[in-house]
Amino acid sequence: MPFPPNDQLEITPEETAALLADPAVRATFDLIDCREADEFGICRIEGARLLPLSRFIEVALPALPDKTRPVIVYCHHGMRSARAATWLRHQGHASTFSLAGGIDLWSQSIDPAVPRY
Image (cartoon, rainbow, N blue to C red):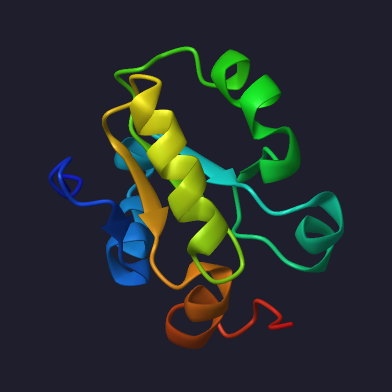
């Protein structure tokens, strides 16, 4: 499944779930949680890597060396991830997307087993 066009900053939970459901596609992109460690401890999307927004500038680029590899970033409601995705795009990661509604909308629309807080 293709990713949204690069002029679109957000990706829906449904689009993300479809990408995650296909193992061949899942291997082609990075799923990044930009919340803080305490939030990551409450809940997460399976397979996500934690790169907290509070340390994003120092940790993101070394953790994501391939600028051609798509990235999906999420947070609690989508505001921090939009900032992180925009910053990554400015660093040359053109195919970076923010999960619309964050993990909260993910819990409501995709996986109700993910705790809401």
